Image (cartoon, rainbow, N blue to C red):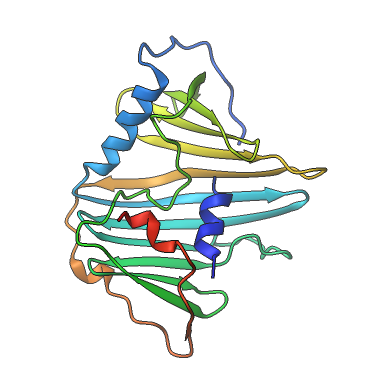
Length: 233
């Protein structure tokens, strides 16, 4: 089952670029500060909206994240309240739970799951299941944007498939507001947008929030080859 791998590949709004003073930081340094801000959090809780469009098909989802360093995460994707079900489902409802020892991947829509044994020191960040942009890669600065009276610096990068990825980063806190992935496909537009709705850093979070038990009637399936690579050697 490759649903979470497909989600990461897919995740990958109208706003007005403004002539705000450009950041003095190199885009790679700015991106690293943003990634470090999340990786350093003792705990993280957030809700993000996720909209994916492919041609005339549009799907609106919510992403719930709970994370507790060094190895606990709940990452859940559900249909947004009030959203009409997409006739051609692009992304299934799903969740990933890291309980400190095992990573559980559940495809809620298909009622299947698989599991991965975590290494002793797994790679970890609260946003590890979002599309990734390497700070050490070829990144560039985009036009700053203003949202809710705040200035956001923009970092962009080309994707191997020929599309582009853009991340909006708060100019002071270095927290991420929005991630946009535009993919290229013959005769078909394909884009996804992830926008933070609310988030909290370093709040108390009990370990019981990361307990997973396969629901009754769900079928365990083989782990997709290479799925464990996200957690490191």
